[in-house]
Amino acid sequence: WFDGRAADEVTTDGTRFVDGHGREVVLRGFNVSGETKLEENNGLPFARVADARKSAAAMRNLTGANSVRFLLSWAHAEPRPGEVDTAYLEQVTAQMKAFLDAGIRVYPDFHQDLYSRHIFDKDSWYSGDGAPK
Image 1: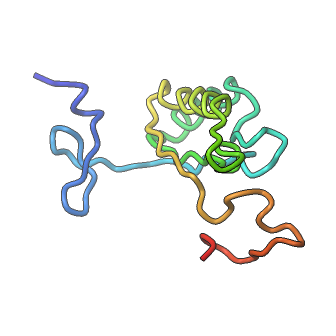
Image 2: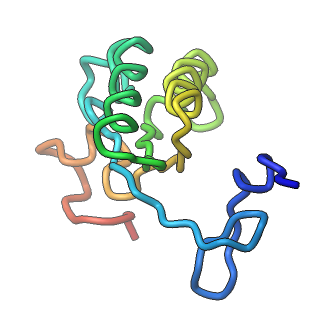
């Protein structure tokens, strides 16, 4: 008897990723950042959900990808301290769902070295790489 849900569950066993049956899982995938760091797409990797679907299908069908690291913009998720942009999060969720629907695991990444597109402005107090100290 095979429980498909257990095959989808990924945990760790020591230094290995394993599924619910204890089988080693090898993650093959891509970094999905696209236009996230540019303002043109409002902090989203893709301009439209249809573009995310097309990309997910190509990754899966052409390369056998089973996972993506999905870049999120903290500056768009929380434009001001304590203010969450739920519309942005709904758009991000729809794009992530395109990958999940294609059978690709999604690992969200609030990217650490560029909290905001303004971090490297000429008058910025910070000009390094990584989280500000």
